[in-house]
Length: 419
Image (cartoon, rainbow, N blue to C red; front, side):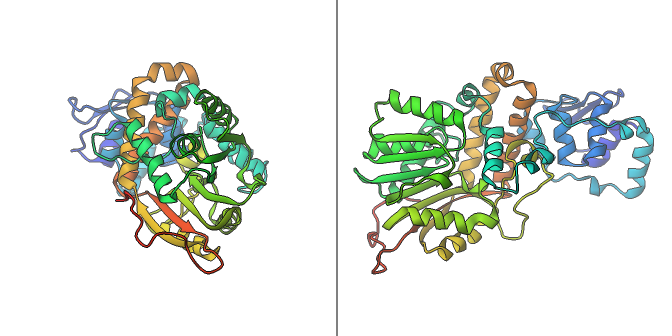
């Protein structure tokens, strides 16, 4: 049995994907705009070692599988396919037809993969040193690379598109301004922005609202880039970004706290201490805006230890449902005043990032290497499909620390431009 026959049994005869393999076999329509090419037996070896998404990812990242055409289209068309759809007898026949050599071949994962043993040596999940290494793995790739992918805003979080034809820069500005309006930022206030990335929210709060803003990040490259951007914008008296763990922030008495894209790195078991820490940093009447990726229900696993995202993109990342996050905020004292789902906006954001990567593909490969560029191409296109199909969501949750008289210090009906 040729590889193309196995592929056709998995995807069916009507899938609009062309398949070619090193054994000379072909399947699918030759006119298809997407072609999957298996280039060597090592690709089969990766699949034998790790059947499913991890094996496929290893084969693609290492260059033993190529995708010709749009990665999103391939993943979208093959989203529901699974090896479990093949009868056991046909699986056995396929294994026999492949021969023993590729199945017995032991090949190491690509160097872009974060090995479990590497993290285990740094302590238990979400220990400070281990968190620092996980953040370094993903965020300290190259500021130049991020500039190409993210665009001038250097905002690596879900944008908010005021209209479907808005540019990415307009949408990222709208996101930061939505956070600012929900927090009701006013001149002279103090803002703590944890997991601040390249300082987008810190700069926006200082420049647009006259707020004294402190941002913290575990990425040294982010902190250096942000401090330079703050100085160039003439905002050094109002804005600061530090290279440090948010848990080491000593100051307190902040009027507002924003957390935009950090909660995914906290871990389910640490949410109570996380929200308690943020609660302790606020004045009575202070507000927290928590913005993060979520699961659509509480039934899914919070972490897939053997999955592509965990091994290559966000080591130790965990996603909870919005209901679980709201409960934990309430349990630490916050009164939840508003929440909204921006799922479709993240799909649009990721499409823009994918387009940026494609536009700078050759430069990106020279900057970070083909394997790392392929990780990003695969991960972002897969996330577009995930958000479109409601496999993941993005929620903003607004909480307030009530004062002694149980007053929220919020207007009865805030005049805000919320959806």
